[in-house]
Length: 80
Image 1 (cartoon, rainbow, N blue to C red):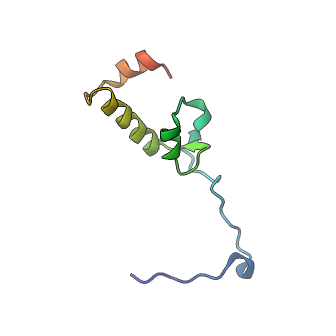
Image 2 (tube, rainbow, N blue to C red):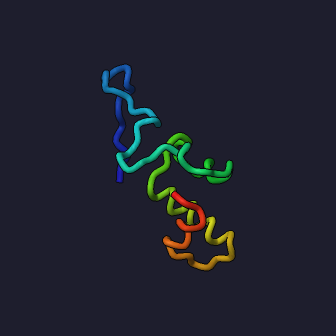
Image 3 (cartoon, one colour):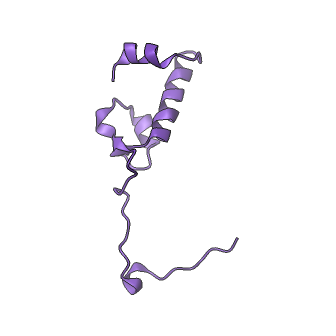
């Protein structure tokens, strides 16, 4: 598949999308307790999507011994 060449923004006048523009499902990452390693995984350090949250939860589960934990038990331990 060929890559389409596009004109620079200055030429077209099209609005540029910044990294701060996020999906509707994204939530502020400040709502969560994240380590520096987990925050480095985020595309935008200020926002977390559901897919990124799933990855972080899987990493935490693996670090706890790799056993699967039901959501109800995880929420009971850590809260929302």
